[in-house]
Image (cartoon, rainbow, N blue to C red; front, side, top):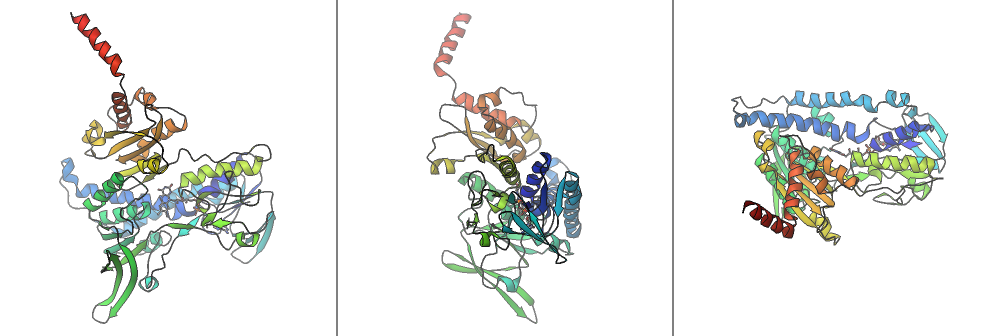
Length: 483
Ligand SMILES: Cc1cc2nc3c(=O)[nH]c(=O)nc-3n(C[C@H](O)[C@H](O)[C@H](O)COP(=O)(O)OP(=O)(O)OC[C@H]3O[C@@H](n4cnc5c(N)ncnc54)[C@H](O)[C@@H]3O)c2cc1C
């Protein structure tokens, strides 16, 4: 029995059904979970519209004279819903039924290590017995305990898409709480669509998991498009001021270096993290330990060796592709653990923040290498130098590769630039299969493509590691030949 039909639950069920196991997938709400309905899919659809608006507004850069982009907020948000509907069949009950999964649309509760109770919306109950359970219950937006927040009202990734789709006009003044990937993506998209956006971040920088220079690059990109980014600002409380003349005024009070500032807004988006769903479905009763996430061992087993967990509910990364990666381990260990169990391999985990330019990373950055005391060398290539990027007027950003000192073995890569998320894949493959920078350098890359930057960074590494003694001899050889 698999609980939850988001990325983790769907992939677990898919794999289990593919190897002919009998699988019941229970989903309480929407098939596809967060990613399809509230996360990756709607946010990337919105980002595409925002990017197009930005390009139209800067069309003169490409020799085109146009009017400024005319926003139809309703149509943009309708497009987002349309995109969700177009992707929906991939995660649908019909598809999974065809794959051999028994999909049940109800709320699951684990009542014993071998029994799951399903509560249907029409109040029917059913108890299914099972040999193994996979918990894939996901996470929900964290709502900060801000006094007055409920009075002014707020949106989260869970509520934003439908609420905005019902609006005729885009809220003019938006406050985005949070400087992580989700907050930064939303702030960038809405400012490009024409909103006044204030992004409030308590940390001293946005995207704080990335290296400082990467955060700085991202910050400048957001500022250049008009986001007012308030770093080192702590949200203190919200206030609703109502008077007959001016109507309702929504205000958030933030603190910066001991001083309080009042910011007026029309819509507040909370993007301050997502909390695993840990209550209400039997973990407490069974005594399955949780500590912010469901606690598992390296095999994704909980306290009970037949109950596994995968995806956002277990962490440590909250990405669709990591949920899918863990799902393989949960499914295989649950079904075949008697013969052989596999430890989850977290060595090569990529991710991308889809601001513009994109920020993509796999493996270590300098921050983590220093924290873990791992020696490294850094090789950089500036994408401003790349022919294709220049032709596309997208010549900004860089690639930074960390390698083992004196060797071409890749420890981690950060790319900031157009399509960084796609460019990263070559390094993900290289790291996964133990290919070093020499192998990337020895691979033909089509001219002119953005992907050539991967080869060029490898070339920079090679130049820095050229065999100096040998080159001196070769130089002498050439002199001798000329003589
Ligand atoms: C705005 C936003 C943008 C994002 N962008 C990206 C991105 O670009 N790339 C990326 O990789 N990730 C992105 N993510 C993260 C990604 O959406 C999640 O990591 C992913 O959805 C996690 O999948 P999951 O299966 O663990 O959980 P979920 O998708 O949350 O699925 C869990 C499911 O379990 C169901 N459930 C819970 N409890 C029960 C129960 N007791 N009984 C039955 N059903 C239950 C829930 O209804 C839900 O459908 C984004 C997230 C957000 C919010």
